[in-house]
Amino acid sequence: MAKKIAVLAENIYEDLEAWYPILRLREAGVEVTIVGPEKDVVYTSKHGYALKSEAAIDDVSAGEFDGVVIPGGYAPDKMRRNPAMVRLVREICDNGGVVASICHGPWMMAEADIMRGKRFTCVGAIKTDIINAGGKFEDAEVVVDGNIITSRTPPDLPAMMKAVLAFLGLS
Image 1 (cartoon, rainbow, N blue to C red):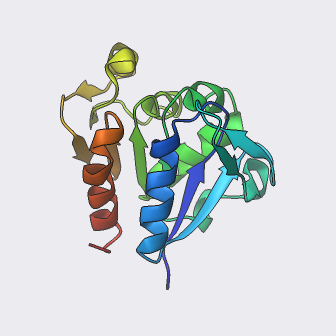
Image 2: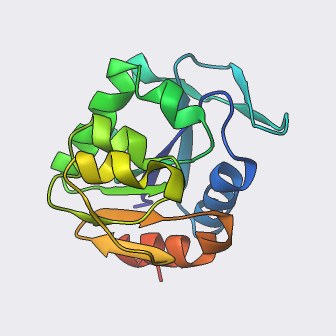
């Protein structure tokens, strides 16, 4: 049975941090669902690249997914204001699913209150925010702490996705 991963979508996402995971997961046979605040809406990246949602956040539940990917850019600042998106991240984490995030994505993880006592990495601009949410920062291309996988910036995507696929048993 194919693994299922939600990739969160919102405006001002970082192109590579959404598309690299989407394509890599699909290449590995994972069923990817792009989940936004609304279904069939085109969300645009920092550079204007389109990402069309396949499901609305209110129409999905954590039990449908083996994990979630939270792209970076400034989209996570919008996502963390959406209680349903925050709840999805928290519930997937609580269910033992993988929660993978890069760049500014850990903002969502802090909002979901899943960083307390966890090792993580992220873009330097939000390091203090995640430390204040209880996380333990490490400057590394990828940090795996249980079912939480984090990376810093686009050059770290290969290491992040290798860790995600290993977690899913697909490496």
